[in-house]
Image 1 (cartoon, rainbow, N blue to C red):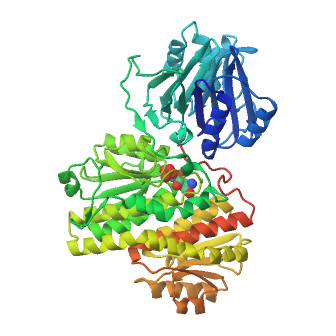
Image 2 (image 1 turned 90 degrees about the vertical axis):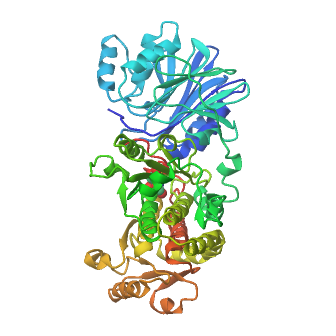
Image 3 (image 1 turned 60 degrees about the vertical axis):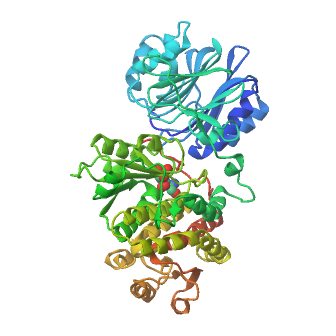
Length: 617
Ligand code: AGP
C-alpha cells in the first residue's frame, strides 16, 4: 500500500568515530519530528549493515544493544507518517540494488509524486521492491544508474523524480562518501574536524559542531571525513556560506525537568528577556530590529499587514492583530497559512505579509510566504530556528531567540512570538501615530514582563490541584474576549493535543450562540478574566454558565475576591495591562494541559499522531 507522506528526521555521519552512537545521538534530538519507526545503515567492511524497528527510537536502541554495528559512515532516520502502516518493512533506510548485496542505502524526508510510474518501470526491468514506500524508488533508481560514479547516479535519479526530498545516501562501493540532496525538505550540513554531518534539522547537530551550511533546493552536497562540497543543478561548486549554530547542549537537555514541555514553560521568562535584548531603544521610545531589510519608506508606506501561520503560531498572529490595530493603527488580517496559500484575495502591493513560525519549516506557512513573494509583496518572518527555510526566503524578519523548542506542544515560542509582535507594534506605531510618551510607557511595561512571568509561575501548585479535580472531564470550554480570545484558542489547543480531551476556545460572549448547549455538570468552562475593559461582560458570561450547572474555573487578577465568590475555582495571575495579558494568562493554561495529560497517562512530549514541525501539506 502507498505510504505517501511523512515528515521525518534525518542524520548522517562520516568521520573517524563509530557512526552508530553519533547517529543515535542525533536521532534522539530529532525524535520529536516523528516517532513511528527508526532505522540506520552503516557501511561495515564494505557492506551495508541495516538496523530498523517499527515504533519509538528506544525499540531501535534496544535492538542495537543486541546487534551492534561497526563502521565510521552511516545514515539514519526517524519517521512520522500521516497514513500507511508504521511497519518494519516501511521503516527507513531503503535499499537499492540486488537483494542480498544492496548497492545503495537512502533515508528520505518528503513525497515522491510519480513513484508509482517509476516503480512500474523498474519492476518491468526485473527490480524487486521490498517495501510499499515511495522512497524506495529513489534507492532503486540510484542503484539502477550506478555505473561507477555515485554522484552521477544520484543526479540521474533525481532528474527523474517529481516531488520533494531531503535525502542522505551512502553506497558500499563508495565507502567514504556521504551524499545529501534537497528539494523542498530541509537539510543542513554540519562541519566538524575530521568528520562531517548531515541532518534534517540543526537541532541534531548541537554539541557536535558549531559550523553549519544550509543546503538549498536543487543542491547536492558531497561529504567525506575531511572534505565537504556543495554543488548546484549544473554540477558547479557553490560557494556556500557557513553559519554558526549558537545553541548549546544544555538547551536540548531536559535538565531537572521531567519533560521538555515543563522545562520550556519555565524557560519563558528568560525567552522574553532574550527576545527583547538590544531591541528596545529608550532614546527613540521605540524598538529596533537588525534584520527587517525593508527600507523605512517601505515600512511607512505599508497600509496593511497580513499575518499568517499555523496552530500556535496562528494564535500568536491573532494576538498580533489586536496589538497592531491598537498601537500602530494599522489594518491587519490574520489568515491560516493553509488557507491563504490557495486564496487569491485582492491585496494592495503595499501590504506586508508576515509569516509566523517557530520551526520556519511548516510547509503551509512556507507556501503562503512563497505565494506572497510571487505576487510582489514585501515579506517578513518571525521565526525561532535560525537559517530555516522561512527565515531564508523572506525579505527580512525577526528571530524569536527562544532557544530550541523540543516539546511538540509549543509553549515558549508562543510567548516569544507575542513579545516580538508587541515590539513590532511599538516600532510600526512610533513610525505613525504613537507618541514618545506612549512608546516609553510601553517599553517600561514590556521590560517588566520576564519578572511578571516568574511570579506567574507561582500558580503551579494551584494548577496541579485543579488538574487533580478536573482531569476526568471529556470536554472543556475556554472562554475569553479581546486579547484573551486567541489565548482561549491556544489554551484549548494545548489541552487537545497533549491530553486528547475535546476542548473548544470561544469568544466568551459568542458562547451563548451555540456552544452553551454543550454545558453540563461534566463540562468545565475556563474563563480568562483578569480585570480589563470587558471584565463585567465576561463575569455575566460566567454567570450564564453557572446558571446552567457548568463547573467554572476563572483565571483572574491577584486579589480579585469578587471572582472567588462566584467561580468554582480561581487561579490568580499578576495584574498587567490588557495587551500583555496573553503573556501571563497562557502560563496557567499550559500548566493545566500539562498536568491533566500527566494524570491521564499521556506522553506529554510526544503526543500521539503529532510531529513537531509539519513539513508536508
Ligand atoms: C503547537 O502546540 C502545535 N504543535 C502546532 O500547532 C504548531 O504550532 C504548528 O504546527 C506550527 O508550527 P510552526 O510554528 O513551527 O510553524
